[in-house]
Every structure is written in C-alpha cells, then in structure tokens.
Length: 321
Length: 164
Image (cartoon, each protein chain N blue to C red):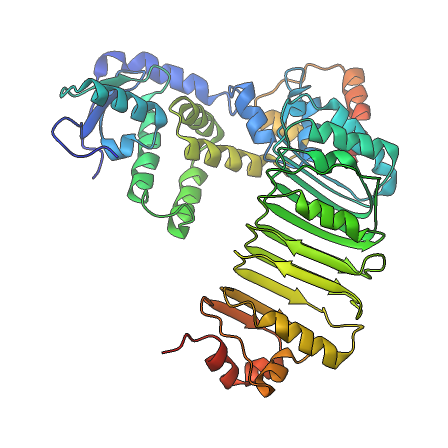
C-alpha cells in the first residue's frame, strides 16, 4: 500500500522553507559527533587518523572509532601500531584488523593489550612474523579470531586459554608453532562453529585431536604429514569438511587406506569438498566401500577420478530408494 | 505479532516540523523504531483513535524521503536482507541527493531510529570521503580550519604514519 495522502499546511511553510535552505548551505556540517564517529568506524584507520587535521572539533574524533583496520607494510612502521592503540579513547572495539610484516616487538605485544581490554569481538592479523600475545587467548568477548602468519609464529608460554564466545577460528602458521598449544586452544572454545587451520611440518607432536561438539565447518590443510602423525576428528555436528594435501610424506597405500576409513564415517556431511593428490575414492570404489552421504547437498572436487566416476556420485550421494 | 483485529491500528498520521501531515500505513511506519514504539504504546492502551505523531526535528521534504525509503523496505520486509533488487534501489536512492540533503536524511534516520537507513547513509558518506584529500573533506563537511600552520604540522607529525 502507498502513502495515502499528504495535507499541505500553508501556515508554516515559509519559515520552514527558509530553515531548510539554510541547512542546505551546510553540506554535511551539522552531523553530531556520534554519527561522525560511526562513519569514521566504517573507514580504514589511516583515513580516519587523517581527519585529525581538519579542525579542532575533529582533532580527537577519530580516536573514538570502534573499528581499527590498519595496513603497515613497512617494518619500520610497526611502531605505529602501538601509538595508534595508545591514542584510542573508545571504551569498546568491535573489530581489530592489522596487515603488516613484523609483529613481534615488545610494543606490539603491548598493543594487543589495548585491543583485548576493549571487549573486542573480532581480531584479524596478517603478518609474516607474529609473536602471539597471551591476552588474545584470554579475551572473553572474542567471537572471530583470524591469524594468518606466513613465515614464523611464536608463542609465549601459555598457561591459560579462555575463549568462551569464540565461533570462528582461522589460523595459518608457517614454522614455529607448537601443536600442544593448538590442542589446548581448540579445547578452550566450547562454542566454536568454524575452524580453518593450515599446519606445516608437525614435528613436535604426533597427534592432534579435534573434538569440538558444535563444530559445523572444518577446513584442514596439513602439509608434510608423516606416518606417525595422527589426526583425530570428533565433530558430531559437522556439515562442511575440507581436507587439503594431507597425504604428502606418507606411504601412499597406507594413507589411502587410513583416509578411506575416516571418510566412510562422515555420513552426516552436507557439503563436501575434496582436494587431494591421492586416489581415496578410487581405492574405496575398488574395495566396494563407498560412503553414503545421506545429507549431502553440495559436493565439489578437483579429483579427476572422482569427477569421471559417475558411479561414485550415484553410490555415494543419493539416498537409497 | 500484532494481529489485524479491530483494536489494532492500520494507519498513523505523522506530522513534520513544518506542520505537514502524512498518513502512513502501519507496516511502512514500523520501519522506524520510533514510530513503531508509538504505535505499540497506543495499541497497548487499546485505543481505536487515529494517532498523530509529531516529529519536531524532521522537515516535510526529508520526511517524504524517509517514508519513501520505509515504503520500499516494507515491501521487502519478508525477504532476507540480501535482496539484490533492494540493494540496487538503495544505491540509486542515495545517489541523487546533494550533501545537505544527505546530512538531513542521516539525522532524520537517526532520530526516527530507522537503523538500516542510518547505516546506508553512513556507509554512503564513508564511501564518498575515503579517497578525498583533507581539503576536499573540509569542503564537504563545511569545516573551517581553525589550526595555526604550526599546530597542523604538529598533528601531522604526531600521526605521521597516516600521512605517508
């Protein structure tokens, strides 16, 4: 239905028109601070910090933003992160995102303290080097945590992990991580729904257990897994699974046998993405043990033998008639 | 959910600051939390009278625009928020305004608690200023630089990383 009618009241029109015209000269000048801060929170922090030179009113407006998004490509700029966080006056922070090279100096560790005390909900770190500060793993308000460290990630000695609200955990570490810490980390997030991990060269620990009651989506990219390594997945609510390159370094036949035992148990999976350089499904087909995915609604794969095998899809996806 | 029983209102009358009256269908009015709250309060009291809601901060020019937005969004109220047609409409809707109108529309959306319109305006303003120079931003926001050159240089120095 449309706006039905509109009665024009002539008595007051003149003065109000004048008022309106007067407004028109102001551009965006009369927006209140709260709205300006909201707008600034939608911009990259570099842009918001520049507004400090506009005039006295704007001098410290930007320090009240609830989103910090910084890109510091040069390693000599890393000092800036601390100075940004120290300037910040907003009591809470919704999102903190940093893209840089080096995050392992004392100042940066302190920067994260300023982030975590602000009841932050989202942290994203993309860096070549990163020394993870303990406060990140004790941040009770955190919902999304994404750590993308390409070269070396180091941890301080952690004793406690407490992430009661975490729903999404993404991490991609180069060398230097400890699997024990990852296992403890996973245990500390009871509400976790999405987990994406890239792990390389699991040297110091032979077994990783992923037992997460509410997990819906799991992406596991393990490079250079060797025979003695064991990955145990116990996730009753899983609906999306992605496994990439798990086979490298292991005897091909053993690996195929092991992974097929695992795949056969994934009957509740709804979305399946398969990417591997080993022929799991050819093996399963040959021993007549293809899994039946009763809940499957979407499946993608880069495996030529799976794509070619119409039998595979017929056997494994369709429910029995 | 309010039912369409005899005690519930189907329309309200909204009065702009320049005393123009707008008759608004309830579903459209409910896009504004301010109007919705007024309607809910009146319905709780069980009144059958047409209610008049005066908006002392919104001129009729701007109210017309807010209601145009609310009307469009009421049509899509049952769809999910990612409707492409609606997104396209939103973008076209804001594109035609000058900054002064955008200013008033943003304030009206804030005052009338039409959160999606407020978000839309703020995102639009953010997108329009993100690539501008300091001087251009001063123009848009009608800002007079009240710093001395020395003060301005000091601030730039303090946030040097942002000015590289």
